[in-house]
Amino acid sequence: MKHTKVKELLNSAQTMQEVYVKGWVRTFRNNQFIALNDGSTINNIQCVVDFENTPADTLKRITTGAAVALKGALTESKGAGQKYEIQVSSLEILGDSDPEKFPMQPKKHTLEFLRANAHLRVRTNAFGAIMRVRSVLSFAVHQYFQEKGFVYVNTPVITGADAEGAGEMFQVTSLPLDNLPKTEEGHIDYKKDFFGKHTNLTVSGQLEGETFAMALGQIYTFGPTFRAENSNTSRHLAEFWMIEPEVAFNDLDDNMDLAEDFIQYVIKYTMDRCADDLKFLEGRLLEEEKTKPQAERSEMTLLEKLNFVLENNFKRVSYTEAIDILKNSTPNKKKKFQYIIEEWGADLQSEHERFLVEKHFKCPVILYDYPANIKAFYMRLNEDGKTVRAMDILFPGIGEIVGGSQREERYDVLVEKMKVLGIDEEELWWYLDTRRFGSAVHSGFGLGFERLVLFVTGMTNIRDVIPFPRTPGNAEF
Image 1 (cartoon, helix red, strand yellow):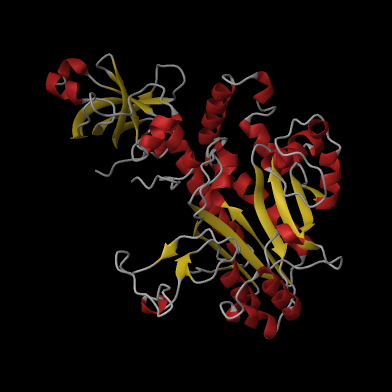
Image 2 (image 1 turned 180 degrees about the vertical axis):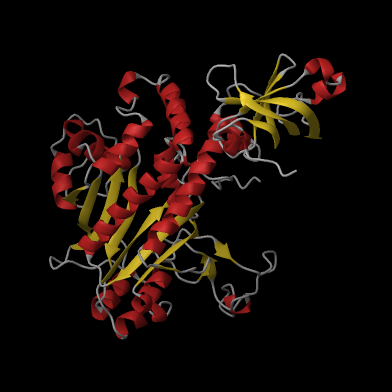
């Protein structure tokens, strides 16, 4: 007999004489009531054991974390808060779980404790909900772009190009580190390495994505990216997933339209399909907020925040206008900001971004036309010669969630910018070819997937929205 998922049973339109379920015990009360979960839903199904006719040895083995298979009748529940329960007729222990050693006992655990047990934390309600939401969000990304006729492109994980020019990259090598081959000048001889050159893990698939957009029209990448940035913060990971569309013939306005439409689509798609999980996560967030001082509590619940993004057009504001607002703001004048805004050209920090979204405009904000010297080399230079056609999308509670731009399509201007920044033209000869042969206006953006999951789940630490976080000093599991 094939077993049925708990979600299907709880959504059933009628009771049934015989059902077969498999799952893990969440709790076992009074030697009688099993709360069973199989991962298909955040909701457990109550299974009522006839303890008088069940061997004592079997009852002892029904512990939190144990895997069991049950047969019985699906009946209307007499208990409050549940539609159905299973009257168990037979029970088999598939895998024991020693209650003295199993760390995920039914009690409140700190997030730090759960991170130290990342291989088991998904067995808790919160992490089961987060990972189901992550899965649906991931599917929504593909669904959106496929419906719009975008081509999905897998850009390389190993690359010789530094798309951001930041240099914070993980090196890939097959050379023996205890006996590195050297050139006559005493430098490492990368010609003897596996790829015959210096290579790294990618920080972005954008440059390669652009080459495909200039032939296929509109493409997107969705894959792992890596930053060797020693940032031990709640918003940074060394390995994360990035969504990067690139569209030929799109200017910056088209790019902003696409990003706004995309974000609203994937959030709505997920809200429609993860109602139970999001309701649970909202309750979890409310409990967490109670421990904070009133001034630090969010003005909106999780679902209010998500609807806020769906129901409000994103406010478009130039960097110059934003700087004026921030310079004249009360927190800046009273020196409440950690980083005081004194002049045009400042690189905005998370506190500034959140002020604009949460306090000033009270809606999602798209900032555009940033100073050229704080943005990447590939962004299109404006006619003023000092700003570029860049845009960042700012969200409540998160700050920047999207960074994008109209790309510099003019060969001469791009080469000049690369020279100024010391970027090797020979290294990026293939990228420059897209400006030599049939160049055209084109735009794209990057969205860090974990930041999107962070926003949708209401979690506050990015390490809690990826299965196995990679951070400085931590590559466990």
